[in-house]
Length: 367
Image 1 (cartoon, helix red, strand yellow):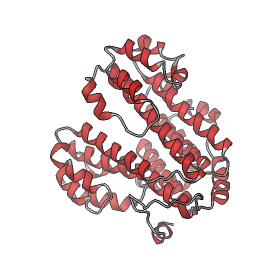
Image 2 (tube, one colour):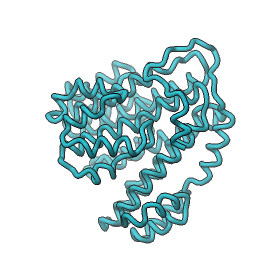
Image 3 (cartoon, rainbow, N blue to C red):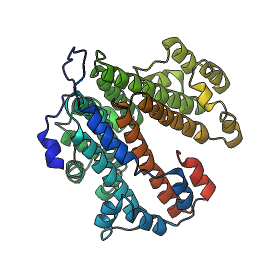
């Protein structure tokens, strides 16, 4: 499968804009394949059953599901949570690559650029791991080879790099190398700020790579702008809750969303958390979290709010996919749902291994 993907022409990070009123791509075929895959996603009631299982029972359950191939293949080399985590990562990569291999034309190009977020995740995982002197095997547990580069690519870099600096040097040839190398001196001192800049570069490249002169592309652009708004709201919540200085918050905000600049600036500069919430009420997204905002004071945690925002993003993606059944939206909806399933299963397995109460694990799941 990887060979088949490699034979396709890889899209440029900055593809030339094609000013056609139409977008090429085999949308009906790919959407049909995605609908079939979506039927395999775990229903909500399955999570209720899994919450009553221990880690070994969860692993056995996954081995009898669509994760059988990965669980079986890794079963001789690892066990417990490590087996579950590696199997989930490999399955996610396999599914993402398979869907991309179904695509042609502009659809293939747009989805390729969208999936670069997985490469960004891996770059951050590698550099974070090296900054903590983590062992190569530990770093590779966090790697999701669901983007452009296969698992072997990341493994080679991890094994031949001893420091953050060497890791950056060995990423030469990667689309984001120029940005990473420009932050080389800062990365070990201010890793969080550097990760933010990398994330900003990804979304900037993604937005600039989508021309909106065709209906499929316009829908894709609207979807990405809503995603940016969601991420910015989550950033605002976390930073205002932790009393981060407005100047630092501003450096973390992603450009390209639909939230008005004035509203964003007022939210960033709010004197306290209460004033921030008052500013947030001006946004349509506020209705999503209105009923759970009170839990922040009750629990001293943002968990309920963050989960509500993530569920809203999932709900919007699903509604949009139904309104435009032969577009990129059903494909994106499935990719998000698949990723959430993998994250939910990872949370379940880790929670069970650590002996967390069932209710605590349940509150961490996105359903």
